[in-house]
Image (tube, rainbow, N blue to C red):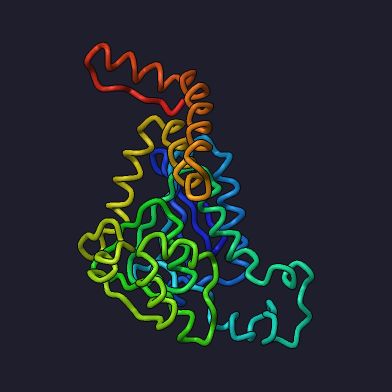
Length: 274
């Protein structure tokens, strides 16, 4: 187990477990913590030992309560535009959301499946991070909200990109306009939760799913994931071309050869992720 205080990491059978570790603050994210999350995911992008990533929150009471309200209120050491008397760094002036937005981007750009294990609350930027993941496992304690408007804030961290694609435009509009809090059953019905499990079992269920992916043909899995995201902003002709190029690349993997060989031999494939 390696730790840098607010972000924990553990490798378990090809699954990298990244844990937001501020349980006393419901795993609310500060600017510095967001930078650590971005750095960690950049490292994982190049780490071939990690086939799948699970993102979760420590303490069992929260996945992530969004941006830390002390920092957002301008009371922390890191300044925030419009609310702090402290000088604003040049980078932050150009990109106010900074590493918060970048972490959402990295969840997709890491180019490996990212599975969210969601105990307790996932609100604000925390909900955005969860929605950027490939699949969301939650338990009966889970509550979700695009809570920004209840604090007088506008949505950020990419939530307006993912929310309408997952729940539809009318529901997304209601969520960002009212900040309504959804319990686990309502969130599951809306499509925000993929798998709803008993209390305390979100992480174990997410790990079971992640390990199954890690034992699969991970190069092909990663190509498929990449193309699903790519298709959101591409034409059919473009996707057919992307798939054709990738199929030529992928056919030379050991897993593709094993997959076809095992089919002919009428046995289960033994993939190596190579």
